[in-house]
Structure formats: C-alpha cells, structure tokens
Image (cartoon, rainbow, N blue to C red; front, side, top):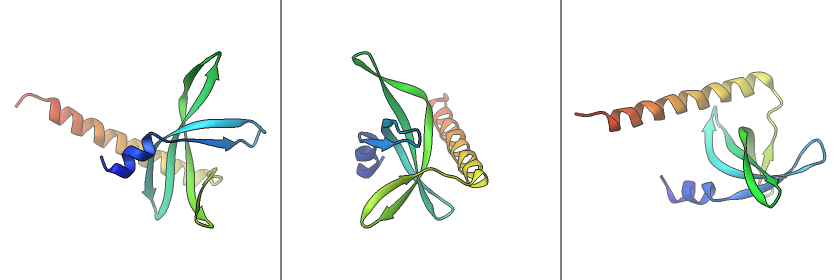
Length: 105
C-alpha cells in the first residue's frame, strides 16, 4: 500500500448532507474509474459517547475545485451503477488474491 493510501485511510472528513445534517466520514479508499476520481467513505455516527461505523459505505465523486478536493454525490444513476460494479470487481479480485496467498502450495 502506498504512503498516500495509508494517509488517506487514516483521514476523516466532515460533509454537509442534502438533509442539512453534518456527517463525519472515514476515507476508505480513493480510486480512478473512467477517467474520474471517486472515494469510498465510511459514515461514522456518534452513538452516545462512542463512535460507531455505519454499515453502509458511501461512494462519492472527488473533484478538484480551486486547488481543493470536493466530494460530490454521483447524481447519474448509470454512472453510479458502473462505479458500484467496478468496486465489486475490485473486491472480487482482492478476495481471489488473498485466497491464492493463503492456499497451501
């Protein structure tokens, strides 16, 4: 894993939701697909005094505006579906690689 990936995985961001709520999210990974950059985020919600991860990750497009990274909702359903399929494909490849590494020779 690259140092950039290590750094990003330790990062949390605060997003303003369309519902007016503020959300703290952990950046799980940033990846490129179809010449666009996306981020897979884990919503972190406070439960009492504990932080607890929400079970459902969030996928957002990552764009650069005025030298700042901006997270945007993917509004195009077809684009969103393609990105989800790409993530599933990556997850399957990782599982296969891990299975190959752990198999007896």
